[in-house]
Length: 324
Image (cartoon, rainbow, N blue to C red):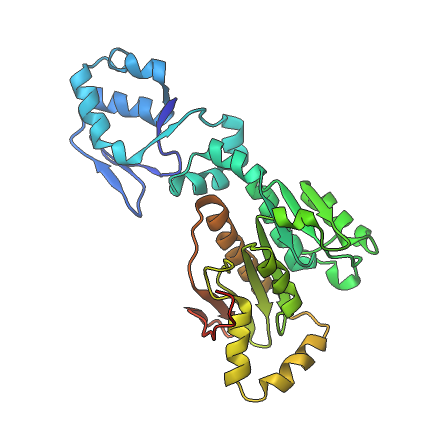
């Protein structure tokens, strides 16, 4: 067991005898004696269970002072069975900091993420961006049904390389992402093992996209680009939350001419994913995915960014479709 002051918190000098850890929910430790400062140095570096027993001697102080200080800083102490390799911290500090700031053990969470599989509906530049981020986060397997080839529209600073033009998107994405990425030509029983699905659409979400995951009880989130901006749906947990069909049913019943408009939008084949909308939506969807996969945490909110700069979060209106 290793004990350390949470490495994700900024270590801040306040005065000669005062230190602060973090600044959003800060812990300030004041009136420190020299022995207490030596103790803090050890806790900042991290100590093993064996070192913990001999800590008073190492810091040239007594057990009572050590126990008192440990109580004062208990809120920011982090305990781990294995600790974190220094090379891993250097390579993925931000990802590890996220885990620590959410109160998770990075070593345990890393193992858990390795067992997860995420479906990405499209491997266009948006899907590729999401795939890269999921790989960086340590998700073990990525799956897609996308059988398209890399087109000129896919080649960009946020997309594929010019040399990959004409390659199957999955193969090209595999080369760029580096983690286990699989393409399925049809829905199969392996889809029952998908941990979460990320749907990517323009103008309107195809009902066939989400019905697949409703039927399999797989949580899913939708990224929808439209003529004003982009909207990321709440995470849908089948049987527990309103689903995308509930949101669509409300529009069918309340938006003028929507029953006529919707089929025409489904027939359009275009992309409205400009760079600003793409990066915003990818980040929001990824954050929702990781919060659920790591903590089973979810919020009933859609997040929307318009090209005008207007940003909003709201509970989308829904009419029950009978999914619950």
